[in-house]
Length: 112
Image 1 (cartoon, rainbow, N blue to C red):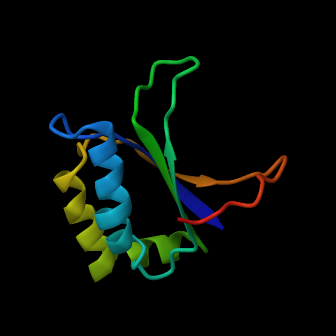
Image 2: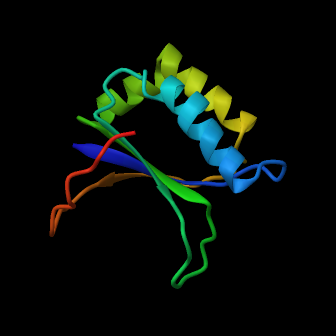
Image 3: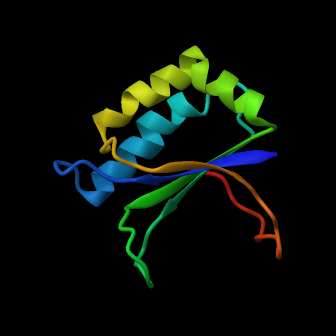
C-alpha cells in the first residue's frame, strides 16, 4: 500500500474555519469519489514545533499501489477534485508518494 501526503494552504480570502468547512463539506465529498481510494485523512495544523515548512493542514490518501493512484488521479472524480482545489485553497502545496512503515499503530480513527 502507498499513500500520498501533501501540504494544504487556505486562500487569503478564507478564514481558517471557512477553509475547513469548504474542505469537509464540498471538496472531500468530491475527492472521496475517486476510484480505488482506501483512506483519506485531513490533519489540521494546531501549531508548529520546529522546522521551516508552514502549512494549514496535511492531507493523506491511501491506495493499493501506484497504478491505483494513477487511475484515481486520471479519473473523472480525481480530475474534478483537482479542479476544485483552487475554489478554497492555494495551489502551491507540495505532495509526496510514500510507503508507510508503522512503528506503533495509531489509535482507531473516528470518521466524520
